[in-house]
Length: 163
Image 1: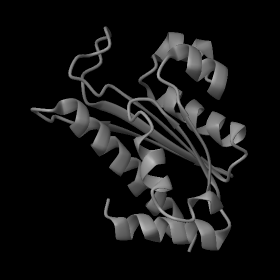
Image 2: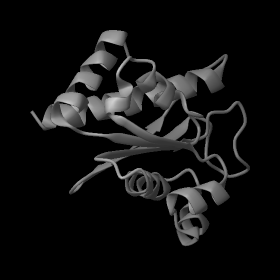
Image 3: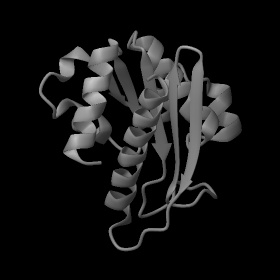
Image 4: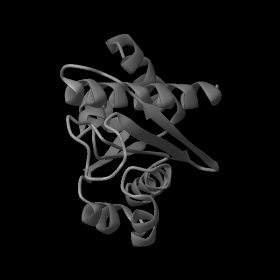
């Protein structure tokens, strides 16, 4: 995502009086960093949590232990609960939850490196998507950057819907 695209997102959030909070796992705060790199981000950015462990997902975001047991931390169900939980915790208009396996190794499940789930929740709206990447080389950085970019594109798409 270019700086101009990020600035457009920031302008749209500000113009519409919307706020955003993020629950990041595999991206480790990268989306929060990108959004807050811009001057004036305090007008729309409210809250960010890097919830790497299952315990953090449960305690800080309200992800149900039953969800983690049934589907795992890397699942559409968990991503959706992360986005809804951070939206509630952050008292924000929009919540984004990101979970995935960045690599280079898997997480002791049968889920592959490069499996990523991103969810965006807003009032009366929930969009959760699955991505599967196949990077080589520095897969960890590639997957983290891909996930951050995909989350920001989902946010831009949502904001475009509101026009």
